[in-house]
Length: 458
Image 1: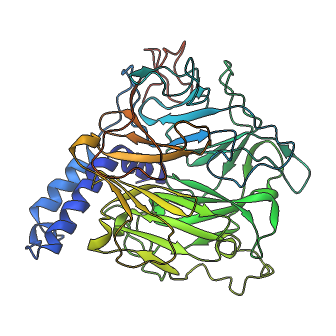
Image 2: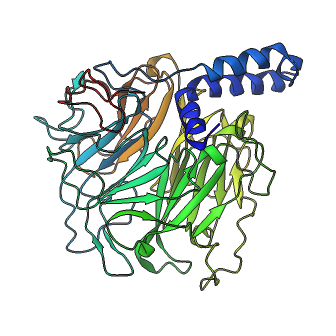
């Protein structure tokens, strides 16, 4: 099976496969017989047949379709980079959501606090103000930064910057100086191609070196679940616009077996199908939702992880070893972690969306790891959670309501929003429940065909 086919199967059967692995973990924890799951077991054989026959996502739905990624840009910090420098041009507010099944990135212009045209204010349904589908085959992870950068050869990438991972195309698109009011459906300003991509998904940016000094261009961390590893790219090394073939500046090797179609050698990193990453610039720490092992892995001195493949060791980095164990991790029954996916580090707190547990787990003032319970937990029937996946935070300090965090739901294909992200907890209903309706495209996606007005599938 080709790498492209493997990536396609993993994404399109992601929900099914994670449900199966979660069930097996439950059986193990209860001491039940797992003989059916052994290589000669009939259940495993049936599972493989079902997995192989999962098929393509539908292309004829008018609703959001498998929203695997979401990002929000406020006037504060766009959720990922440090506070914008003086004179930053990132003054627009917008949100982006991937619709994997229709091969689109949906753009929503405006602020969540705008009572007339802002994001999520309708509390019922919302149509994107613009749609990106040029060159996209399987968009999943998203990132927005209010901080631009300049490459080593002087090529600028002004803010705001939209980053999109293409899990089927195995590439990363970067839209520089992104205008959320666009109507022309532009392709990425820069496309990062690497033969090491295998269904890339979550992304995070490191803007500081080992001593905390700001970098002229960030290190881009990419969760690469198809190979059960983490890749890092020094964006200062981009040679210009267009498609660039960029070698990783750093990585974390695959840890344990990455799953049925992705067997990997065992390494010290402990990685097993990692889906998303988050980065704390203040702590220089990389957080990984290590989905396959029901853990969150924590790697200190994250900048050094991001450059450990460089030919010479960077100042402040004692090791260039990509095979290092986590500095710490969150793992065990008390954590409630089952299939962690979306992850964000915000104001000293770690937010984790757990796909199988249908819960948001929050560790406030996180200083250590281990089998420790979350400080706050959102779960229960009132939440209406139905396979939550991506997690984004709008840190606009406007009052009311203050901070908001958002979730995407894979099974129901809608979006949820909670006010007061820094305090919300318990079995409480979302402030927003939004059904997203896509505008009809005038033509199909050129890379996938299609005659219904939506990007088609071969």
